[in-house]
Image 1 (cartoon, rainbow, N blue to C red):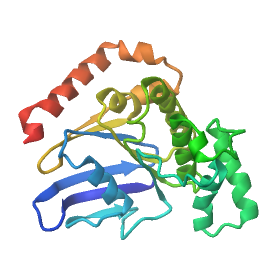
Image 2 (image 1 turned 90 degrees about the vertical axis):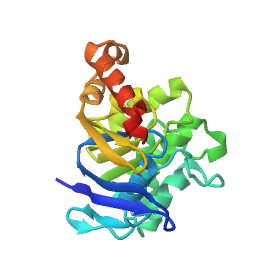
Image 3 (image 1 turned 60 degrees about the vertical axis):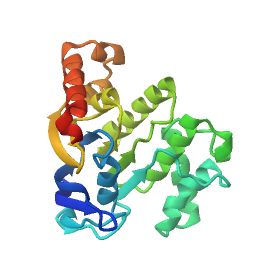
Length: 257
């Protein structure tokens, strides 16, 4: 099983106090780890460390036991702003990831079209990015991440800018991808219900500096992927109990101090 590990990591920017201190987090293939915390808890910094965008000031980040020294194709990133090239079409954006790997064009286009089709964008391949809705753009971003078949998918509040209905649909899309392909997913969010609904584990960070204060196994994402309705999940006593427990953790003084 592939593993991505942050071991006793500390991160400081420009000589200031640590943003993250003594944080340890391990993600295995097939896990869906959601990360939640108050402002100042270093949620996005955790993702940057996992992606190799920044190096830790202390501790280490490991991929299958090897030190992470920068970004790599085995770790794909999906951002909140879709980070797509607006002058390119949907399929050209997706094939760009394969171009970076040196794949010949004759292979890139069919593979990009296949992934777009799986994400419900068949027939939209030639649309420019500015011609697509917010949810469609996020699907293109997800397709670009998935086309290189990464072992880990790192998502930084990817649905935060979407309306509630589109976000619910994107939850179904990403859970379907996860259930089918079994990548390890690190999903940063500020939404408690989203964190509960998607994850197999929910990690709560405390702030100033960021560190793990709870790591909670959950099963709602698996249940949703297997066909249980969102409404029935939200009305279970366990869901309500965990939601209130996590809200208390996020807003209690020790989580923000």
